[in-house]
Image 1 (cartoon, rainbow, N blue to C red):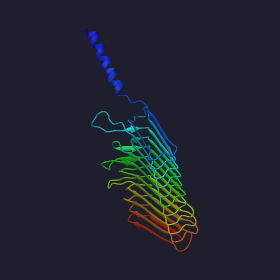
Image 2 (image 1 turned 90 degrees about the vertical axis):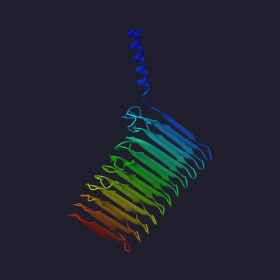
Image 3 (image 1 turned 90 degrees about the horizontal axis):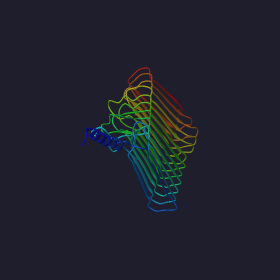
Length: 333
């Protein structure tokens, strides 16, 4: 074989190997409808990194019983092989309507990813969204889950979960909404150390026996800062619970909890720990709320503020600030 031919052959082989390593965009759609029972829809995509060729996955299920929908995106391999699996910029979407005991689950190892679940008119349904930290960080991700008229149902959202609990989770958003439900729950978690500029929103509109739990930060070396948690339980809620916590020794963390007019037997609990400064906890229970309880805790730091408002008699409020300086606690009953 001549040197010229040999060189051409080597170049061709190299080109083929290079092309085989490229990950192009994938788009997957599954639709199941018409009263099916025990339907199962699953999508698994390899993912793409650095904004190149993001994948899209969509599942729709309607009028069924015990339907299950699952989606997963991850690269499955990376260079070097000893590094990590990661995806980026992917979109996952699941819609379930008129189902009984429906289950929707989304998983991604990613940054800049979007996950969306919508469940309407279901009973005993669950929506689970997870975005893992592919290496040492996960950022600019968005999770949104909505349930309407789904009693006895749950929403669980997690961003930043890692084996070492030392990932950096920043600029992520979690939004969960339940409307007209009873006995339902919302759980939100931005995990790992060094969580900053994350926002959690959870709302339960009407109903009784509902719970909300939101947490940002997890480790002893956490330096969580500029995070925000918003929790709302609207008018007429009964026997509902709100719990929010931010763990971290940094600044400008904010918790806002609201329970609407005319509720009864509701509980609000909030804490910011780890010596954080310039933090705020605002708790409010509206007019006509009876038997309400508020509890707020801030540990260490300077310039922190707790504000608790209860507009009807027969309620209780407790504020605790430990250590630090220049902290303020205000209660209105």
